[in-house]
Image (cartoon, rainbow, N blue to C red; front, top):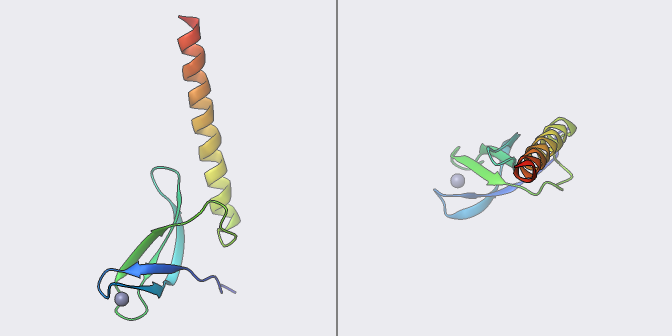
Amino acid sequence: MSSQQHVGYCFKEHKKVTIKNPTYQITQNNRPAVSGTCPNDGGKIFRLISPDDPNIPAEIKKKLLAAKEASARKKEAAAKKGKAT
Ligand SMILES: [Zn+2]
């Protein structure tokens, strides 16, 4: 089922490898990312991916969208506050 492949940079080998056991997550900056391990040496690999990446699970996409809307609302609220004064 999980045939998604992501290439990341292995800092141990100083080369690009296919990320093993990729896990999708959202960074503190609301950017989607993939973390996994190097198939050759088991080193940790982390890489940011495009929000448009078709491999991103729906669950993560939903969270991304929610975070985006939340930050948009925050901005809007801040703008209104600024105007009100
Ligand atoms: Zn490696």
